[in-house]
Image (cartoon, rainbow over all chains, first blue to last red; front, side, top):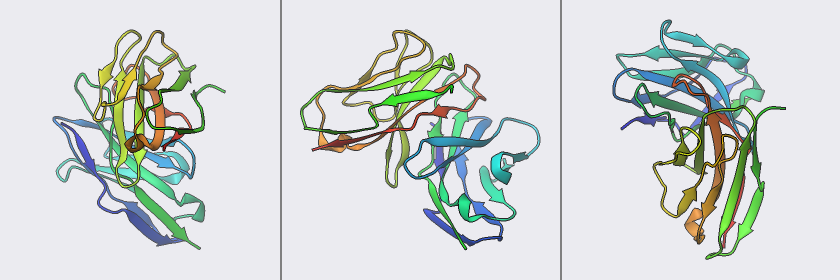
Length: 114
Length: 113
């Protein structure tokens, strides 16, 4: 079985400061990892994914994520937060088996304070 | 604009009633999914379909059924709604490769009273 943990329900950061949203995963074998963002009353939007290769993945809106196999983590980062980054962020994992289903974490509400 | 369309956007439903949530995609994706989103629980998979004509059970399938008669449509049916099925429901689709991201619809907010 595959699972994702997002240990922080809420992250607050000041505008202009770096932000980190944490994610750890559990899966058999090597994972595919994804980050999504959800704005109020909207569906999920894809931000970035890790497939293989470089452990630092760059995505939309200046976000990046670092894959760490030994710590089974895939933390989302941004060097300088914007108020408009305030949203609900989800980490997701898919195993490299026959199943295509994504398993999501419980989500982290990011609030960027002006 | 290509994407996923869900209908209705929101619905208040009496307990015991039957309801079908509609989902249509125009991206010709093979795989489609239904998730429910509940506060503090994230998104949980209800049912999925890897290709037209096949379906599978996800994490929370009880009380729900799906069909996949063609590539584009993936309706979700609640045979007899209960209050615990109050939730926001998201349909999603993805291409065949396992490393491909899923695309989501805007969601259906369902309240069972």
